[in-house]
Amino acid sequence: MTRKQFLNNLYHRLEGLTPEQAEQHLTYYAEMLADRMEEGMTEEEAVAGMEDVDTIARRILEEEGLPYKPPVTPPVYPDAAKIPGGGGTKGYQPPKRPNSRKIASILAWTLAAVCVLGAVKRFFGRNTADLPYIVEEVPAFLSEEEDWVFAAERPPLDIDFLPDELSFYSDDWSVVGRYDIPADEVNQLQINWVSGVVDVQGWNGDFELLEYSATGRGKMTYTIDGEVLAVQANGSSGLLVRVPSGWLEDIEINTSSAAVRVENTDVDQLSVQTSSGSVVLRGLYASSLEATTVSGRIALHDLFADHLDLSTSSGSIEGSAHAEELDLYTISGDILLESSYVESVDGSSVSGNFLLTLSSGVEDISLQSSSGDVTLVLSEDVGFQLLFDTISGSVHEMDFRTNYMDGVYTHGDGSCEIDVSTTSGDVSLLR
Image (cartoon, rainbow, N blue to C red; front, top):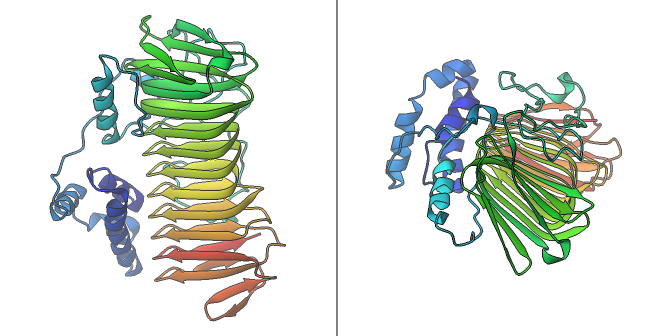
């Protein structure tokens, strides 16, 4: 077992702890593993010498006054083998219907489960709404078996990992519901889903809802309250929402085990909350955008936001994102992002690695990691001051001519402040 797998398994057994409490304990064990590796152990030997994760989790929860609950196997939904996982907990108040308690219990239960990492690809064309869904795998930058390699040893970051055409198409899924809503009746969209696929697409028309199912029976209901369109389903199905191009006030998506994609639209506030499903965001502008997943992957392409907040526990965050303020959080997942426009970056990781390719306009970078490595790729004309605080990490590679004084590396005019703090992770600054 690798260090990353050990920490990920431990995290998913700490049900009941706040994210801050869980991170504190994970940091402790990440540092313990780092110490053992510094003494000459291999990563596998260091992990093998630890107590098993169940014993450690039980002790931690007892110290925090919480009961220990062994990991639970997620429920099997219809055709689950063809559908990626996903889930979320940030619930809006759904329409009052007889099944609302069932939906709430499913949402809460799914957060404690670790579902299979799924990914998403694009539709075959804009006019294929009657085609049912299948979700195919999106190629990842790093395979799960591949160890982290410094940026200097790998090809340049390729942000074109999403193909021009996505396929959500399968012969055994069919349209079971279609609803048209005039554009002037709605300026907010709220989706509360359980499993399957949620796909939101901008287009030149009114609101259109299409539900797909392999059973031939629809599970979707919707209401309009004021200018808020609320959509929900309590079973496994696919949802396509076509939204008018232009500007929406708010889109909020919460799922239990559904993959999510939002594409080609402008919105003031966009929030995507999912447990283990993958999230694809492409061709978007939002004043504020938040995407959170527990073990799913977040994939970004041509994304613009004033404030961008991305969070994952064990899934990766990958792609291109442009924001004035960029907040990144991960426990064991890697973060690989390219941005041609960003002013400030704030990131935190326990054992995940950072690989950030940033523009010359960046002014402030603050990254904290326990055992993960930090690699920054910057333009030659970026002047910076690097403050690197570490216990056992090192400056692995520096492509810039710098002056070093009182713990600070200075290049050029020093206008960009870079603050990197690690326990055992290394830092590299590349051109």
